Length: 415
Image (cartoon, rainbow, N blue to C red; front, side, top):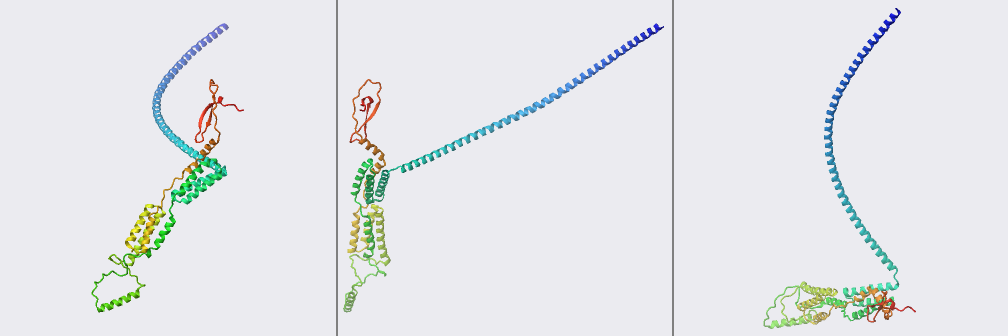
């Protein structure tokens, strides 16, 4: 019994185990089916999600492509604007660079010109400070020669010109400069020429014409003048007894008036009587003509001077009576006509030109004072290339030395 119960318990336990195994199998199958369903649902949902993502991605890609195209077009426009701005900036840069270069060049030119002027001024001041007494005397002589030329050709002052030339010669003598010898020779010639110039006495002629103007009031007019109009004379009748008595009274009255009234007889017919204003006008016209003569004299205008004298002479002959005073007046005008107020002045500018180029004269004088070199015969003709030495050979009458090329081998060594 005991063994039977154990057998039953064992069978019961096996039966339970089998039931448990079956239930576990079915549970596993169910779980497997659930997993497969879940997997299929997940796959389906995954597929749907992927399709939705692909559709959304295409739309996004199209929008992005459109936006990229817009951005590219904007970028091209910006690049074109940048290129325009760069070209404008480059043009302005070129313009500014050119303007700056021109300004710099002009500034440099002005600076160089100013620097040159300053250097010249400094050099001139240094030369002035470094001058000796002889240099100052030569400069003074140059100034005097310039004054002599101006006074002669602009004013015609021969006396001042001669004195200036003599003073310049004195300055050159005191300077002791050897180069001034030829200048002094030329000044001596010019002084001699100036002394031979015949210069009229302008001051004396002017004073004489002034005196003639003062004598105009003493000249007697050809026509009579009063304050009344002219009345023609009445025809004379045969004298009667009463007329004879009247004529005697007139003669006695004329005798009493003698010395108070001047009676002038004229050979010319008197057609009119001048008023005092007309008489004064005639005399004033003569004074004006003489004044024009004086102006021409001061200006050394010889043509106007002689024409003025001729005009004054003609006016005097037409309007004044030819008495002693008028004849002397006309003779004085004729004497002035023979005077030449402007002479042909000589040229005295050569001495000034020579003095301004005194450096050349000094060099020529120094060369003329050197002894002449003797040409030595050439030896050693077969030398390859002898050194050449220029030896000056001067003539006494020549101002330019003749140059002779002598090889160095021909010159004897110093003893």
